[in-house]
Amino acid sequence: MTPTIKKITKDNFSLYGDLITIKDKNSEGINNNTTHSYFDLANIQISGEDKNVRLNIFDAKKRIFPLKIDMLEMHPLSSQVFLPMSNNDFIVLVAPIAPKPDLKKIEIFKVSNGDGINFKTCVWHFPLISIDDAKFITVDKKDEKKNIDIYKFSENEEFILNYE
Image (cartoon, rainbow, N blue to C red; front, top):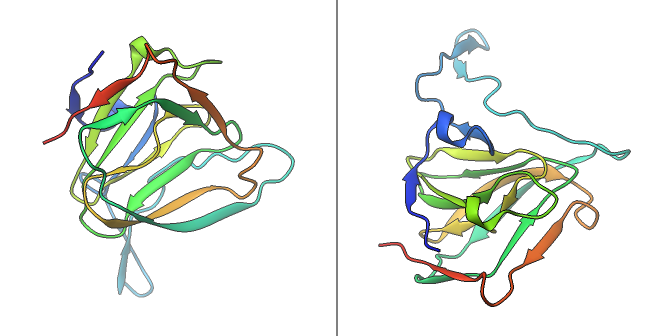
């Protein structure tokens, strides 16, 4: 199994969450028109009793390819944002919402031009795959111990992701 890497769009990623981009989005002048704001770029979801959110900075290291894909994770109580702090590309590997990931339905997307993503609650995904050393803003539920499920692949499910 070696899915191809697709260029991400709002439409082809909508099953998994939001593409965070200001392309084709109207801004609104605020603060006496000294700032242009792009509102509502992602649908942040938080559930459970504790609705505390955390804003993080991930200092991601460049992934080395070929990359062994041997697990997926999902967050049952929140969505999760990955937004590069500069114009860095990254790769997103996802599987649809299900009690356990359907590995035949894995899709892989390349996110470019400083755009970001917001995974919907319960979307299976591989951890951040940064193409270069880069910093990312992340947003998710504060209680990380209860907000993560991990699916480890069996040996015959593992595969190698190539990127050039």
